[in-house]
Image 1 (cartoon, one colour):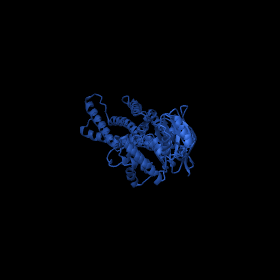
Image 2 (cartoon, one colour; image 1 turned 45 degrees about the vertical axis):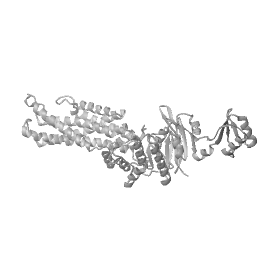
Image 3 (cartoon, chains in turn red, purple; image 1 turned 180 degrees about the horizontal axis):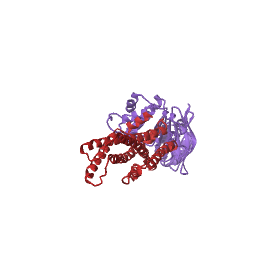
Image 4 (cartoon, helix red, strand yellow; image 1 turned 180 degrees about the vertical axis):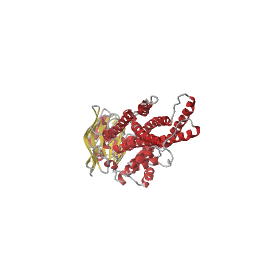
Length: 230
Length: 306
């Protein structure tokens, strides 16, 4: 399986994704800093505390990487169908299930790890930045950081599942736009709203969407053996 | 010779319509099997079923006496294929594509790639991504990729599409070489009879999804009749000469001016001499052949075969 994953990475030149992720993080960082500055004179600033700030980072990172994942799904799965290289791939003496599993694992693992790393890096930079400008009031405490880290890990895990939902729409139509548009829709569904009334903040919603994503991935792998490749 | 691939009543239905119906193919080890049929006759569908891309609606495929199922992956190791048209990961170079192919096939021989590229005469393309290749170059690369792992069965769907006449000739040599030197069995499809005729040992003709004929080239070559055609204005005089002076009776008068002599015992020269001596005025005299083309056109029903 590791071998298949490394072949997929080589084949699709996935290392360039790291550059993409870096750009995404820079953009989120810039946006956060901008919001912090613009809001400083408002009576009700968006980020009244570190908890608010973390919340902001988590929402943006999650949204960005769910969409990012749909781009990877397009590259790894949908493009293979569109360019017909899937006929090549499925003529290899390797189980179709394993080939698909490798692809889906890449998407899942990348989303999970990218969200964790980005949350930590962007959060840490903002904390460092705030220690100079002191725009966000309040203190950081160890219990708070621990609880935020747990939240972050759980969030990343759900998001990695949710990121697989676009696979369903993409496979149905074998279309890249369908994949990415469905990712945008899913993202706006979970990150829309304001303050605490966000759908994605309800653990039950996140968990069920994550499970739906996992279910979609399972179905995609399970059915692959009997499919005709036209 | 042992049969390495056998299909039994192979059928594929798409939306209630039979694309391939009850095909019984027998491909013997070491031969070049020409798979001939007009466009849309079902050649590609049959090949896709053999390579396990498309699952048969009914019937079965035996490869090396082993029945193919949804889970038969190991047997794919023994095949090399191009189906429809050669596809590549086209942002990568030719070499990178072949390296990947080797990795997926579980075939590790660093020399094989260079050898294969050389054999199909693809050199000096080290840095070019496959995207920039012409169709002919892709076709060559596809052929190289298919035989690079030295498979026992090589499946080539329309391998000469997009090649120029020189390329066609070169690839024909490559196919013969692979068959003779490596003992590979080849299944080559085409809608161009002239091509198949030159390399195949056995020909399978498919029409509207049904295999209408499977025959060894040797036996049809023998069936072909040669004849001498004489065109003259004095047909009765000519017939008299044929019958009484030359003692021939295996000839046919076509119309008022043409007569065909099927008797193999007489040469064109002797015939000419006898007719001239009898003062028969000859418009033309020539040796002709019922070609394979006539034979296959008959089978296919005269459509679509160039």
